[in-house]
Length: 99
Image (tube, rainbow, N blue to C red):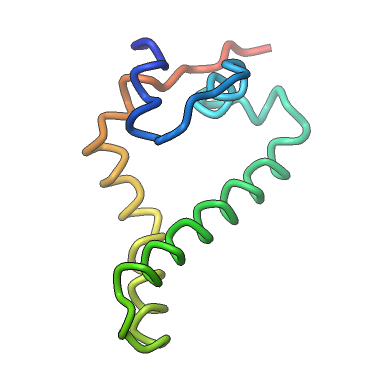
């Protein structure tokens, strides 16, 4: 795993609590953390708001239906996986140790 601080410019955020980023990047973390589903719910909503704001800003004259189609395309699992590969997030993933 590379130094997670390398991710800050890509994410546009610097984490004060480094453990949160480590948890987010740990595969299998959900088995060790009962609140995972709540964090996943929150993360999905943050992603949705971010994508909606980006579309609203970058396509000021686009009708709602067209923006909705773009939103669905951009938030599909396949699209997000492509973006993660392009950003080389795999360098930062951690496998959780079995309990």
